[in-house]
Length: 565
Image 1 (cartoon, rainbow, N blue to C red):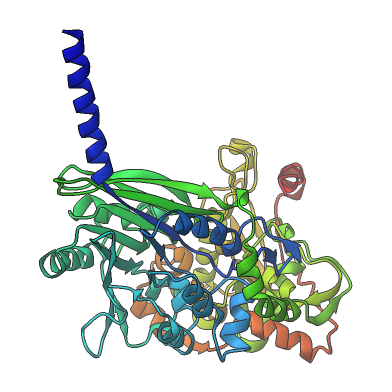
Image 2 (image 1 turned 30 degrees about the vertical axis):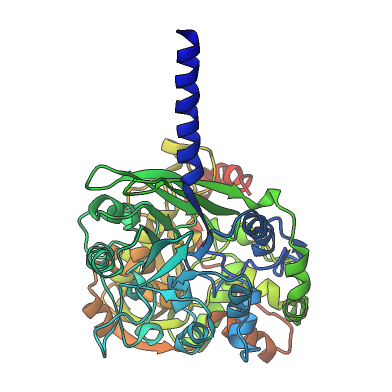
């Protein structure tokens, strides 16, 4: 009996081995939101970077050395964020560095991101033409033809299997960018687009598996949105929950890190992976196709790139480009005679953001400026100021817009801004909003202060009564009824942070009616030009025009919260 049992067990094990042997495994590696983190060097700080594409390449090379069945993808935001990509977008424009690198690494497909669109038609149209792989964006519609502006999907063949890659991007681009950047385009709802193209792909391509490659984040409730809202900014999970047919969903945009599953309408648990930003992590998924199975068994994981060494072959191949970028980033544009402390902007009038205000007022001709620090964890030391330092001061390529607002609307705008920014110190123990780990909530790019008026902010009062305007900057009276010309970034003008839409309740049509002008130059470039006009000596107005009150009560909380930085 025992011998018969052992024989049967051996047969079973052999059968299991045969199944395993016949199984075909495809590996899918993806990057997202690299934002110019190409080399193992921070061109802003001048320090080595612990994560970048150069480290990711080591991991990719090892995967390809172990198998021919590797697919390499990217979920967007490749073209904006560091001096590396800015240099090749705006200075040495002959051959953009991103197509060079992505072609060299043999990516199979990439999805267009909102910050890729932010570089403008001249850049991204040229980049798409130079890419040797499809640039996807099924829900970005060419108004002239009614068809997708970018390729909607592609089919990649590995191990005899056809893997369809469907690319969709966040439809929120018109909320952040002037139409100048996306002229001729329309951004449609992700769920509707996914349903249409899934049906099309299944009928026409007969794929063995479908991968969603989305430049859209995980949390669909972000910025007070709801699941039922049309054109939700971060609809990736909603697509997985409402559209059958996906075997794997790879996402980006929100710079968060997730590796979990989403339940499809038919009840399948579909892996969904979000690899964050700047190549800190990459996603690594496997699809195992077993004989007789209708769909693959899919698993995914996130891998930290801080544990990877730098690819020497990659670094050597692109050494001339790295040296050119380094020389550009180290170029001195002016001199400072004092440190600019970014976190000071959170506690009162501060020169770090005042330099931005001064540039906005000069180039707009407006009476009042509204601006936020884009970073509060990096300072600019006194002495030589470089191009790299300018990316600390102003990270993004926003333009400048001017609208007409009444005095009452300006106060309401500021009330909304400070409500995003501060807490009641007595109730919470902090002045600045912090999370449950005692860390500042990282959305300082929405913390607009004003210049052109003198005002106080009382955090102990309820929303709607915190901001009190004393006068205009020159001491003349401030009127609640009078309309003023107000300068702000194009990001804010187009709805970023929802100060105009949610804070003031304006529709897009009302914003258009209030528009005075849009200045089609990036603010960082304006600031650098102003420094040149100053003869290199950076002089920043000390507006000293707003503060938290009562001063004796807020002092201890300010000191406590400054210790967080």
